[in-house]
Length: 394
Image (cartoon, rainbow, N blue to C red):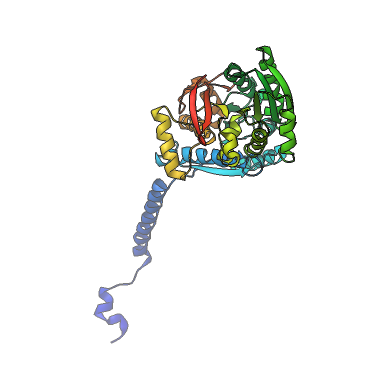
């Protein structure tokens, strides 16, 4: 008997072309269905946000606090479902406090596809970076909570700031502390390489102190990269003022404070919030910081439920005390995330934010004018027993 006459083989015929067509069609349909299900359930790509801040150099400690606040705002947004169904991913760059580096890093972020940039911290980087980006991409929005140069105020640009400029700060320091001064005599020591301090804060403080009847005994500029703290203090105290205003980065402010108090223990220190809000200043200045006064846009001791809750969450996440820098960075990022929730078109972020105008801050509402410049109250702050305490609202 040959194979073809085997009854078994006749009962189980091979796969003929005619029989194969439905079988292959079924497999193809199954593959297409599987692909469709995968396409429907796959996670959409993240939205990229740029962060371009100073993570090295004299502003590094502030930069890390800023980054903590920004990351916390984004992490909470992602945990709540993201933005329009997509997660947000941060691309972080260190601008090193250098304008040329900042511009280069921003162009890298643009190339990577970010929809907006949290940046920059020092005004000397923010202003040229915003202007350079406008020539390449006129719709790239910047938001920050640090840059305070008066030259950034009243400009129809793509920068939104949740902090008032340095001129407002200088006026407010005089308003708050001139009436407290024993003899209305003050000296000022400022960072000469930072325009927000040398070109905005210094002249406004000096002019307003004198206008309201005070006497400026010394105006001392310094470079925090190279200075003689003992000599700086001696120059400021030459005519024994009752107050010295320190417009300096945290560590130089701490060192200069020690020499000021060593040479004239009773002198009252007025400290710019950049330094006063940072752990580096309090830890390094030690007893020399005791009694120092300053102004914050957010009080160091939370007074509102919203601020209290933020502080608790921050300290649980990072095991660090919250500072003004992280809190205001968080506020700024929340404003940007709100705009992103409203539209997929990044060209509309700025107009949406400006049309709304007022946003909930951690302590007080943040009001933005038509140029994206902020108005908000100040809190009087003092160092007591090595800690910052609230002394009232201006």
